[in-house]
Length: 203
Image (tube, rainbow, N blue to C red; front, top):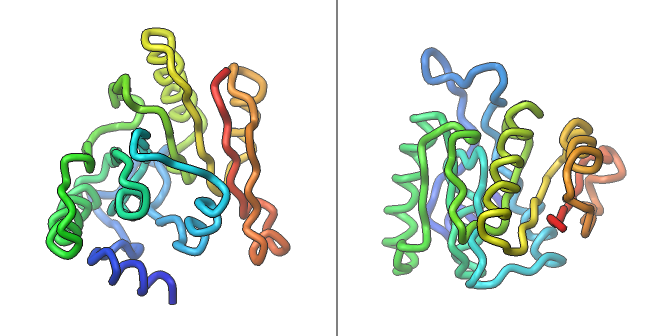
């Protein structure tokens, strides 16, 4: 129900699609699956964003998280997507979102590139992952964040949804990131203990 409600509110189409043929992602990248809207509601009931934040969503797909955050928090958003079909869908959604909401789109950006090749902007300070790829790519991406933080000191946080044990182990044992917050999805967590968000802050 929420999937239809929010897509209609934002005038976008972010449902899952089956990708085949040459557009399919390599094995180290995982299939597109958007974060459920009810999970986003739970996250942002307990986690604050401001218009000064710039959120990067790795494996953004059609841009669901990006439009949701821009609409409700007026923060800058960057979607990173390597699949050209999904990237094109995100751009199409941006046009439809702008027409429906009358919002200006200068704070919404999409890049078609590999996550590990994205050049971290000095304004990027929040990074979102819904298990879009293997821990090896995650490691490279996090190292890029840490290098950027060394070049321009700022508060950086990573948001993990449905976190993998590999991601958690790497952050907690091989980086300066420390767990700041855990947000459990109350109706889903009883059947699957990965139904949660973990927020890590770079110290």
